[in-house]
Image (cartoon, rainbow, N blue to C red; front, top):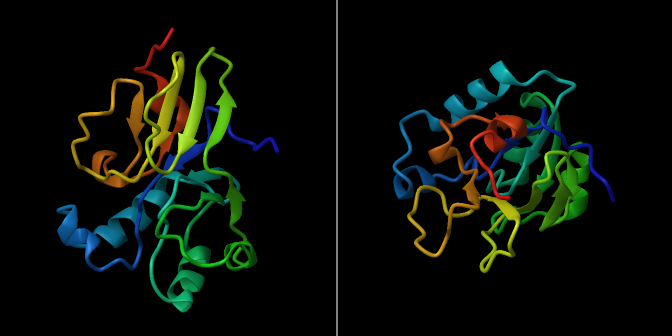
Length: 170
């Protein structure tokens, strides 16, 4: 299936809404959930596409059911290791699901692979946009691995075109 992702698509990963311990594990600032939500809704219009590269939220279904309508945009979720509810649950909330990994040929010539966890080894000519590692150093990852986790992305979504600007892989 082809997904409607392009340079204007918003990208974010590892928000971990309702995960109480992640703030301590990743040294997130006080009020991090509100910060992410405010940044998200200040940037994203209701009709815009958001591609979440995994670990949207943890915890009770009721919390996630209350969260989904608060976030602007048409949300596509690549399920991460903490997105533990059924596909049907997310779909009932209006969240479309994307496969992991998701491959995309970019018009600039980039071959993109989105994945929740980094892909190692990485084929030549490929840029891997991933989450999962938060703000941990991962020495096995190279310059063609792009960490999308909120801790290293100012607790906000970014447009795909913004993320790709500094990268040249050819």
